Image (cartoon, rainbow, N blue to C red; front, side, top):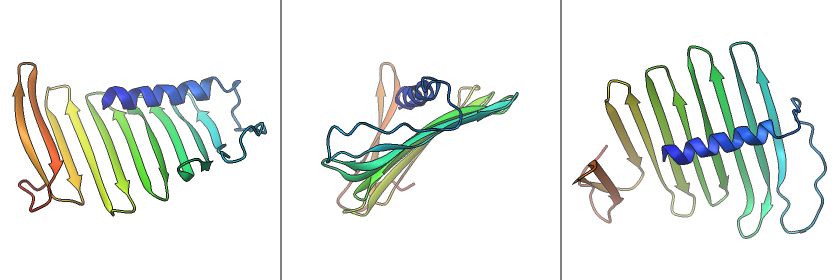
Length: 170
């Protein structure tokens, strides 16, 4: 999860840097090649000062077979405080998002997904500290059961939704 979120943030940072150095989000008209897919960049910006900054890019439009969609990502940093980033995407049928923040002595990662049709959602929060401590919180609108595991490389837990009463509740 961390590698995926980190890749997303670095990819978004690459998009911001690769945008010809523009700082005001001026957008160029897109060549129309497919009338059914009309996704356009809606936000493209960045700002920074001597101690921190932020950047973001977002797009929205109609994308087959999803219908109207929106997607966006951002990064931020502040000297002596933290740096991080995140991604969100969704349509009228679903949504997902995730992000991370790194502090001088700890890190936080969060991610969530939701489905409109089934009115179901779940999220995780993962926190760690440079003293070697970890905390994982899983939250769901549906009952779930968690099973601990012990592999040769470390400990694990797998949580799955259940049809009945939750065996473990957050």
